[in-house]
Image 1: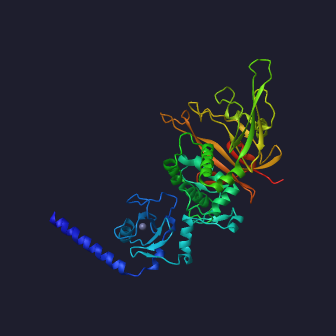
Image 2: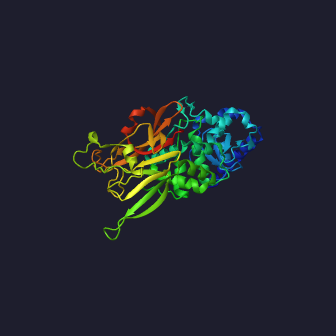
Image 3: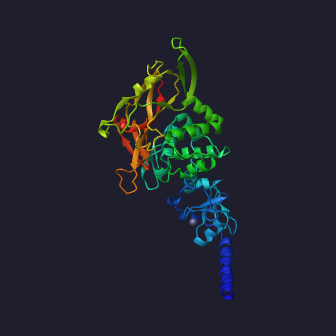
Length: 449
Ligand SMILES: [Zn+2]
């Protein structure tokens, strides 16, 4: 025991010597050459990997790990001595430090490397920047990408969130407000969402894709997002409602650009059979308008993948043109057409035991343009449903259950191209073939007359 204690004492003594020696040295800016940008990932949860605390956390710019504190005995300080890593970034105030000397790097704005790192953590934009978007950009491995049209990791868990976030990021008035404003002094939700959108449009990403795992985990743990039954539509509606309760300005922008109105006339039967019908009129606002697909069951005879029913989108919309459908008792009329008209196609019966397997696979025909009442619309985004077959208990994929997987197709108006985003991959798609997918959500933008 005694020998052990003595050894520990002498080890401690040696360590203190090292600390004293290192601390007495002048900060060495040559340390900046040890920074490895490829190791940095600012999408993950900002907690110290030793204490798990989220307070006063620094990123070691040499290995990319997060550590707390700067004072002696703090995890960051100890890491700097043990690993000989010396350049740290405070993740809250974006200041750089050399440890263990505990000296702030001043005039970091003049150092391109540090500016780039700050931008990766927190991109900022000017009005002029936005005019050139989208533009071709290159990540650290020199891989080309188009900002705003980027993929995400972890599709198995959060693909519905990727789709909804891309949709929100592509409605220009919302996007511009998120990119041009600072949300630091606002609530945590809106701050985190704004950083997400700022990163989606970053022309200086280190990697050509992002992760939103930390953001969605935060929504689940702190904001009460219920992850059961979440699909891109549910998540998009949740986002709209949460945005509106978080920021007055964003509420006003969302209402103005995305909220439509539909008048519903309910025609009731008179209690006496031959009396006049009663009517009740309601005007309902909507973020997302559901277009009801004709009934279809994949299990009925004659319905095979090669023989799927097709319907044109205009036929689905005719329900809202103020004409009484003889089979229905209600009359619908769109009374306000927003700048962004968002459609949802109801493919799932969630009361079914296998909602994915028994979904409605009707193909919706559409082109890039659509006339809705008096207005012309142009298709901006199309979220399609695809399936991943899950193996059954005996490991056979052919009779196992199926899981939904969401793919987002976005229109790049500047280059007149369609880009499909599936996981971290982005692929150009032929506009004429978009309707072959099982469209689930579409965003249409009203065109100036
Ligand atoms: Zn390190």
